Length: 67
Image (cartoon, rainbow, N blue to C red; front, side, top):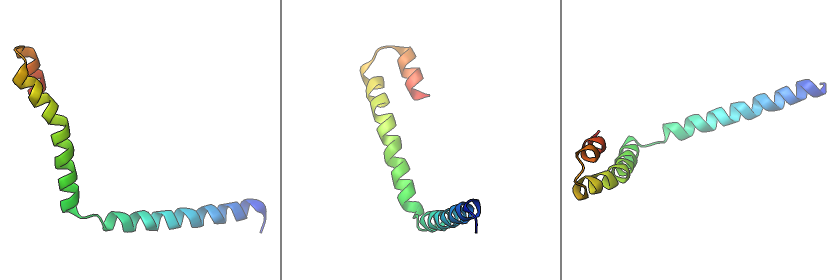
């Protein structure tokens, strides 16, 4: 086996292994955990905007932050 064929065989083996590991990882994800994570991230994004809405007198800021 020449050098190029060897490199291709190694690369193919690595890609195959990575693909199977990624597939197993994705299949093991619990949808409820993803939902909780997204919910927490949305709270992190919206809480500062809500605080700004409550403390400002600018209608523009209130409208912008609601969008």
